[in-house]
Length: 348
Image: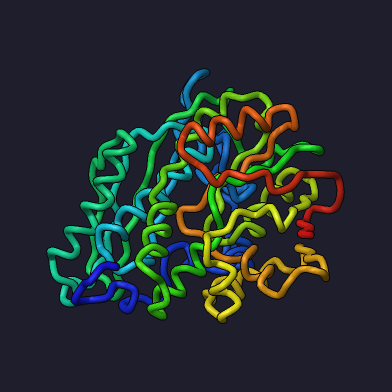
C-alpha cells in the first residue's frame, strides 16, 4: 500500500466518479437551462446523456470531445493521476473513437500538498497518455481547496462507426468488460480495510484503458456502447434503455465483481453516491425479491474508470468476447439482454 505523508483521500469529501452530482439533481439543473445552438454537424450532444460530444467535419471524420475530472480515489499520487487519465480517455473509446490528444485539468491545494506530490499526479496522467499514444498538449491549473485532476480528451471517429448509447435493439445481448465494485473498494480504502493485493486489483482495473472500443465500433452487430462510471451499472444501463426505448434484463449472478466487493458491502462499506444513485433512478429499476440485500448497492456502486457496456446482436457475442479477451479483459461477461417494454432495468 502507498505510504504518503499526506493522504489524498482525506483532503476531499468524495473520490473518483463518486464525486458526480446525483442524476436527479443534475437533471433538475440542466432542465432549467435554455436550449443552445444545435448545428447539423453535431452528431451527439446532450440529448441522450452520451459519453462524449461528436462533431462531424467531413464524410469520414468526426471530432470526439469529452472531459472528466475528480477528487482522489486513492492516496498514491501517481496512481490517482493514472486512474483519472484512464477514466477521461475511456469516453473517447466508448464512442468508438481513437484518442488524438489531451489537455490537463488541475486544481490543487498548493499550500497543503508538497509540490513533489502534485508533480507525481501529473506524471501519472502523462504515463497513461503515453500508453494511449497521445500527448498532453496543454491544460489549465488553479489553486483549489481540494485536489482535482482530470483531462479534456479529444479523438476522431468515422461517423459510419460511431457508437452511441441509444442504438440498442430488442434481443441484443449485454456484455460488460470490467468487474464492478470500485466504489466499494474506495470506501474500504478510506477505512483501511484493503489488503495490498486488493489495492493492486483496484488500480489494475481502473488503469486499464478501454481499447476494445474502436475495434468493436467496426462491427455491424454492435448496436450501442457506453462505459459504466459514476451512476453505476444500473444508471448507465438505464440511459441505454431510455435512449433506445427498450427494457433491459440483467442476470445478477452473471455480474463480474471485484473479489471482495460483496464481503465489503455486507460489512457496511459503501459510498454515499450509491444511495444517491438509487434515490435518483431506483423507481425505474426492479430488483427481484429473491436477491440478497447487497444487490442494490452493487448495481448502483459508482465505478471510476469502469468497463465498456456493449449491446450487440446474439450472433456477434462470440466476436465481441474475443476482442475483449485479445485486449486483456479477462473478466468480460455476458450479463443480460435487451427487450421490448417500458424503459427500465429488471435485475433477477
